[in-house]
Image (cartoon, rainbow, N blue to C red):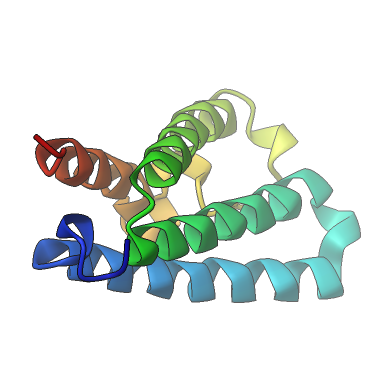
Amino acid sequence: MTASSSIGTGPGRALIAVYGLFSLAAGARAAVQIVGRFQEAPLAYSLSAFAALVYIVLTVALWRGARRLALVALGIELAGVLVIGTASLLDPAAFPDETVWSAYGKGYLFIPLVLPVVGLYWLLRRRRR
C-alpha cells in the first residue's frame, strides 16, 4: 500500500504530518540531551529517544499504509505515555528532567496523550470491510 491507501488520505495526511513533526521534535530534543547532558538523566533522555523512534515508525507506517505496524506502534505509544506519565508523577526523582511522555506530554501540550487515541480511532474507523 502507499500513501494513497485509505489510512493516508484526508485526515490521515494530517496525522502523518503531525507524527513527522513529532519525530523531528522528539528526535532533536533527545539528540541534544544525550550528546550534551546524558549523565544528568540517562533514563529520561533514553525514553525521549525511544519516543522519537516510535514516532518515526508511526510516520513511515502511516505513510506506507502499514496498518498493523501502525496499530502496534500506536499501542506502544499509548502505553508509554500512560506508564511514563504516571511514573513521572509518582516518582519525580526518577525523572530529573522531562521526557516527551513525562506528565502525559505536558511539555508538548498533552498532544502525546491525545495523538495515539486519535490515531487508533482513525485506523480502526478506516478498517477494511
